[in-house]
Image (tube, rainbow, N blue to C red; front, side, top):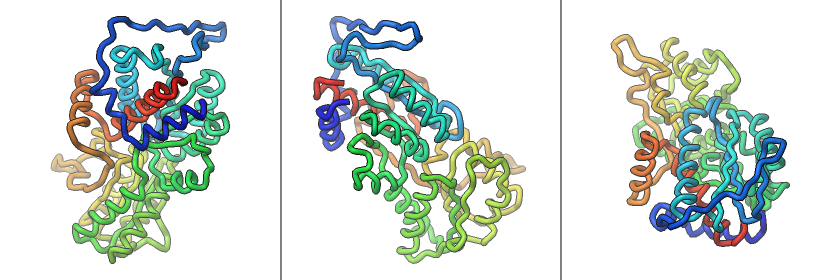
Amino acid sequence: MTKRFVSFLIMAVLSMATSIWIVACQPETTTPTSTTTPTSGGTTTSANTNELRLGVLLPATGDLSAIGAPMVKGIDLLVETVNNDCGGVLGQPIKLFKEDDRTQETAGAEAMTKLVQVDKVGAVVGAFASSVSTAAIAIAAPNKVVQISPGSTSPVFTERARKGEFNGYWYRTAPPDTYQAAALAKLAYSKGFRKVATLVINNDYGVGFEKVFVESFKKLGGQIVNDAKPTRYDPKATTFEAEARGAFGSKPDAVAAVLYPETGAPLLKAAYELGLLNNVQVLLTDGVQTEDFPKAIGTTPDGKLILAGALGTVPGADGKTLDAFSKKFKEKTGQPIGAFVPHSYDAAALVTIAAEAAKSP
């Protein structure tokens, strides 16, 4: 990836120009043809140095797969739009390489290694989990491959970027949790909750969110009842009774729960079965915003969702451009956009805009 490309990528990020692909591309009179040829190893190499080879590193399996699958569809939509309606990038179709990071650091690092060394991509959209992005950037940055995360929200990345650790090869299209955690703290306080416990997944995302939430809630005048002994759960665990008691057993007004879907659901279900959810407000974040999450926790004897009445926050936006994108996404996939689908689309769009402007993928 050239310095010229990185420079134009920075300008694209600053100008927030990603909506151009929704409104500005018109169908071409001719369709460009691919110049890639298969090799004996089963991979492909480009016969044209102007071909944009774009990697995707998102969870198709694992704890965040329910959110990751729609995100990949957002990238597919961007690539289809650019290739079919915009003539590709630099006159060539975008070549897409997809890898499943399985919401695991080791799997993410292995997948990034393949994207960089075998597929020879110039940029990667991913990862989603902050912990996976941490593992992946250790491979991408030294190899001068741009990585744009559509969902790694840990504030740690901001701190590391300011120190120059990424050398300009890491970006994100989702805001850091310094914003969402503060917003959740404000929401909790505005609802009258003064004693709150925290319950977070023990990784970069959960611990980073917890830190900002605690600081923000205290500044508002609230009390963190388990501040001396925070409740953090192992994402590889299979039982969660101890963690449920640790967060809900201190009799808080509310519990700020920073979870992933596949492990967060059994944890909250355990809290319910232990009788710990009575008169305690559950506060949730973007990490569990899927249709299946409440269903996985289950229902009460009278048929109501256990999570009925839960409150939460999620990064997002509104406006005509997002409305147009939402409509287009539903027409193509038959599904409504998920929480991070626009961020994935935008991440891929930034790469295409920068490559086109730099005249180099």
